[in-house]
Length: 368
Figure 1 (cartoon, one colour):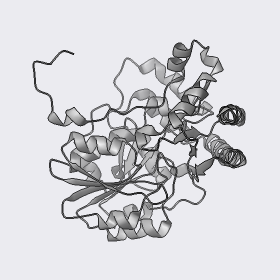
Figure 2: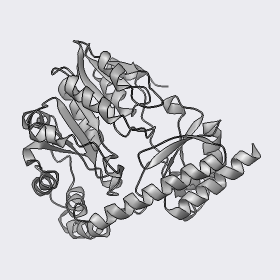
Figure 3: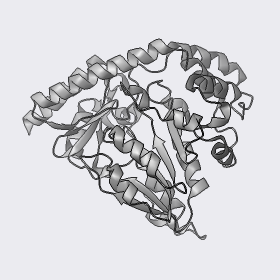
């Protein structure tokens, strides 16, 4: 292996590489199978795809691809602000919510600073902190989810940022409302709380923290949301943060120019109107998750109760079961990279996809 003739950031030496769920095309090439014969239940994507309204808007936007997108994301910000009951100044848009996560890290973290996360947290949180030379304080999980009282106790004068995904990815757990409220109210003002709400729209009765931001009561609170999941726009990368206008103004200095492409802006604008697509997705998710839970229980397979559009199934040798499912044309997600090697993550698909996944899993476990 060639040694580079120049020095790299020393933080890169031990920095892990994020491994996403495997795309259908890649697995099809590897197995020599037609892509149409595979189903992907690995990356918590919307099984119905984008809304038809969003697709129509994308087609119209094609004609202007020779021009740079609106760098201020003006129209989408206006509509999103009206939908949420905030002002456009409360919003920062990103190339997926991952983009906002990285912007937050650049705004708040440096060498010697602390960031507090939970065990089994989203992999990107520690990666961006380590890249900037910050310390990652990992608080042990409670029942595979966040132990928010313990995370609050872990905060010190060195802490600059706390990340809480609620529901959590990859475990699907939902933090108790009382614990969330206590964390929001008692967290010292010098610490920013980033509530990652990527799966917010799948909740039946979500805790609404927006009133605190509207009233300006918690300038150290930012909510992260995305168009990737319930809106089915993962391939376009569109996410956003909601926070105090002065905090947002600081983040805008870090955000890359033109970080939200014109197709994503057009699709997001249209998707906000397609409430039917959102309702259909939410209904399918509730029914599909119940089907998966019931089917796993019937096979005596332990699972982690989930509030998102996926769940973790404890199948034993997770990597082996993942590979056997893949050979049967069902792509799931092994959890060894999250220190959960006995689990696979199954995204909720269409009814037919869910049945096919369970049938294949049943055959594999029977064979074991």
